[in-house]
Image (cartoon, rainbow, N blue to C red):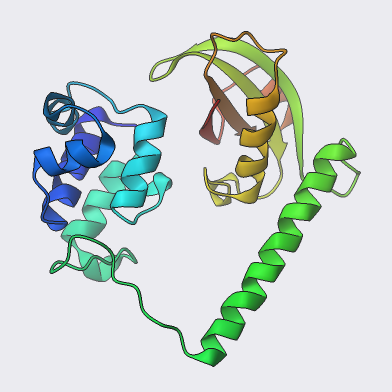
Length: 214
């Protein structure tokens, strides 16, 4: 995560939503000084603030993590799929026609079934058909979040498809929050995804990582 790029993105999003630094500070229950330091790249928002920023600005947490790419999309709106309403502070919501509503409900049902399926995978400690399973873990230092509990996962699919809002990460967040076996002073879990078991065991550079807060 590039601190300078993230600060610039927060500044751009704030102005697009017609908010002052005071307005944003009030919404986040932080000081104006904190907002100023984020926007100038002097400080990095913690993971809880990032989640709240994603809600306020109606974008995904992944868009914030990849601030440079998001800024590129904002500067060239025809090349991306992020849309903003420049005339309103908040996102605009529309009433869906009945046909579209049924489609949304169907998708929601499928998503719920997927969450249940993933939970079963965790309970059964991975059947031979799954493409996602833990291989190793350690307590280590992270350049952004300090001491973290890092878990290496083997994932034969595309790890970019697993974001901080996916059912897998949501379930992992809940399990992490209930886990009392990890030292209490460790607040962050780094989930690292590898295509090969040898890479995971040697802690080579992962193909993708995301973070969970307890």
